[in-house]
Image (tube, rainbow, N blue to C red):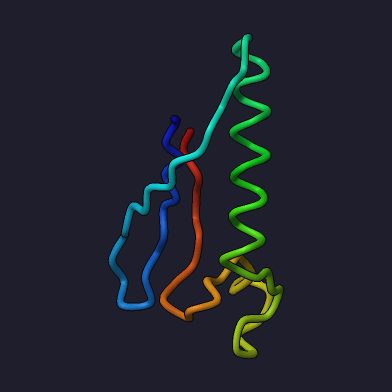
Length: 78
């Protein structure tokens, strides 16, 4: 099992690091990176949504916001 860390900027201004386990059977470094990126993309699309205008705050507010309204995804770390 591998760990994907999702860095979340909470709406209260704090950072939170959420860890998700996944299976990565890659045999090369390149395939490991691709598999991790694919899992990160699938997870991001499952737990968040993208907007270019969060709560009418304009394009500077664009990003991936969690569906539970707790914050915004700012990074994934394999």
